[in-house]
Image (cartoon, rainbow, N blue to C red):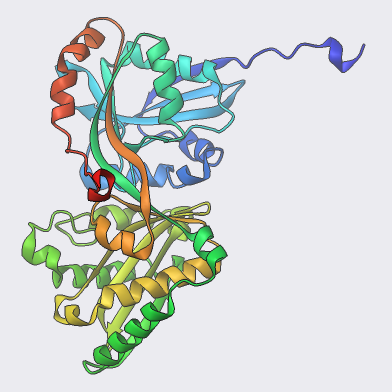
Length: 367
């Protein structure tokens, strides 16, 4: 007999829902889209440690190999039987799905979810998310209601295009930056530091010091700060305990007379860099310390071969000056199982969408 005489049967998909975080999460993350490489056991463990919740994990195996892992925590009153995917809100809240996972895996996942919960919230997450997009298609085909609310537009910097152009940063930008650096040096000796895996979590203390001296401390309640005790500091310190995640973290810090003055912090997955946070001590605001550090940090990324920088949402003005362009929308999704929950979803669709943010419109679009 010849190989052509055999017919390859489709993989057998089996789903299970177990208490706690499953070790299979790392195995699936290793097979997922490169941009999802950080969605590891340590990522979700950090979220539970920082934000609370009791986790369960939905795992789907195809022919005995884990191809989908979806951690879940309770959402709202227990009687609602709702769940959500945990994580830090930035870069996004999603789950790992192996690139080779087929429709049987998605159908098995949805069937198991339908027996366990009335619905699940996934997001904020990008429109082109490698795990959610196929799940939405399968859910709709199975009779689930899928409703979204708009959160924000993302902003992407095409580093490959900058590299090809060969003139970034422009000469005029470099001259302005050198002028700012001369004025900054009048405050003390500047130190420019590129940070990597071995610098966490100690560097986070310097980042937190900068945030407490920045605009975020004086103009907001500080809850959005990434590294302070009152912000998301517990999450990032816990996430850095996973060596694989720590190796994906990159940063830069400017010191003045050895005192932290500005920082930039990113997470790299594959050739994509997520710009997590940047800030500066307001005492040096006149000399654009964040901008100076940012250009140095981006130049280092350019030299390292980073293809794209995802700036996330908000502050589109300065991002466009650097060269970023609008990317996929970021949305918050509710998936409601067939039956009464799905019918209820049809009634609450308008409310859920109105609870999101209005979409920003570029004045140039209407010119």
